Image (cartoon, rainbow, N blue to C red; front, side):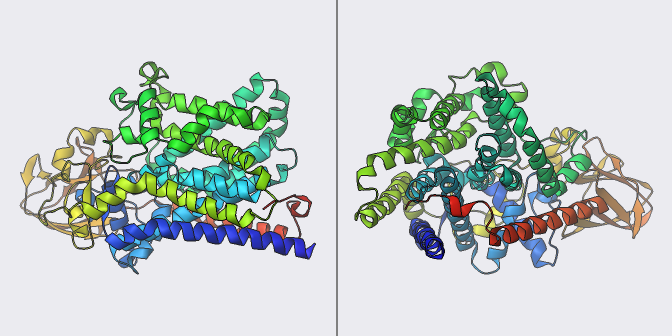
Length: 586
C-alpha cells in the first residue's frame, strides 16, 4: 500500500512540475519585453492595487475607501468589489518592479488554476492524464486569455470554478462523496473573494442544473442531499462574513450604485461571431468581440463532443449544458426581452463562456483520451505526456500570438504627469513599462471610476472627481489637503459659521472630525460629506470606519478557516476520503 501511495504521489508530482514549467514558459515573453498592454478594466484594478500598496507601505493592512487614488473621492470600491486576491500583487510590489510584480501575480494564479483544475478533475474521473488534458484546455482557453489581461476579478474567479463545481457534484450527484460537502463552500467562498458577479452566475448555473434534475425525475435525490447543500451554505456564510457584513451595513438599502445595470444589446455578440472568432483564435479584435472566443479546440468539441458524451449520462448532461451556455452567451437567447430584468445582472452575457469552457474542456479531455486509449497503458506514456505538454504550449501561443506581438512591437504610451481629471487615452491598448507605470494614476480609470458612488452622486460626479468643495453653496479653493490610509485631512479657515460640502462620497461608515471632535454628517445633495464648521481654523478629518462588527466578522472567518485546515489535515492523515479505495491511472 505504501508503494502504491508513493507511486501516486510521484505521478501527481510529475504533472504539477509540468504545469509549473508550462506556466513559466508562457510568461517568459511578457517578462522579457517588460511591458503591459493595459486594456478594458486593467486601470481600475491596477489603481486599486496602487491604493492598497500605498496603505500597506504606510503600515495599514485594511483599505476601505480611496483617498490617494480615484480622484481622492473616498469611493468605496474596496468595500463592495472584492480585494482579497489583490494582496499577493500588492506584496509582490515590495519585491519587484510594477511590471514584473503583475506578471508574477498572473503566473501564480495561472499555475493555481492548472493545479486546482487537475486535482478537481482527478477526483471526478480518477484519471491523471485526462485531468492533465482538462487542466490545459480549461486554463488556456481563449476567453480566459482575455480575462487575464483585462477583467482581472473574473480572471481570478475562474481559478476556483472547478473546485466549486466538484463540490456541487459531490453533494448532488456522486454516491460516495457526501462527506466532502465542505468543498462546495470553500470553492464558492474563494469565488466570492474574487468576483461577486461570478458568484451570482455560479449560483444561477447550479440552480439550472437542479431544475433539470427535478424535471428528469431526480427530485427525490435533490431533496435527500439538500441538507448537505444547506450545511455548505452555512459554512460559506461564515467564511464570507466580512463581505456580507459590509454589504449589509453599507450597501443594502443605502442607494449605492454599482456597475451599470442592464444588458447593452450592442455588446451582445452573435452566434456566427462566436464561431468565427473561435476559429481564428485571435486576440486583436476590438472589445467586446474578442470576448466571444472559446478557441478552435473547444469549438470543435462543441461540434463533435456528443460522440463520446452520449455514452455516459453525466458527460452527456455536461455537453448539453455547455451548448446551452454557449447560446446564453450570444443573441440567440432573447436578451433584449430580459435586459432590464433581474437576469440583466449578468451585464455581459459573454460571461457565460467561462462555464461553457469548463464543461467543454471536460468533454474534450474525454475525447482526447479516447483517441489515445490504444497507447494508454503502453510504453508510449512518456511520449504522449510530452506531446500533450507541447500541444498545450502551442494552444497558448496561438491564442496569445497577437498579444505578445502587441507588447513586443507597440511603443510605450506617452502619459502625462499632470493629467489629473482626464481619462486615459481612448485606445484599445495603453502600453505600460516600469518607467511610465506610475503616470497612469494621474488619469481617471477607463471604466469604473464612479462605480459604487451613492446614486445621487452620479449626477454630480464631475464636480466630485474634479475635487470641487462648496461653503454655503459657493465654490471654495483655499482648502489644504493631506491624504492618508482611509482618511483625508482638510484645513479650512472660515470667516464665519456655515456648512462645508467636501468632494468625498458618504457611506454609513463615513465619519468626520473637526479639530479632533466628532461631528454629525449631513449627506449633501451630491451624496458627499457635508459638515458644519465654525469661524476660524477647522482641521477636518474625513474617514471611514467599518465598525467593530466588521473586525469581529473577520475574526470569525479566520477562525473558521483555521478549523477547516486543521480538520482537513487530521482527516487526511487518518486516511480519510477513501483514497486507498480509488483507482488512479497515469
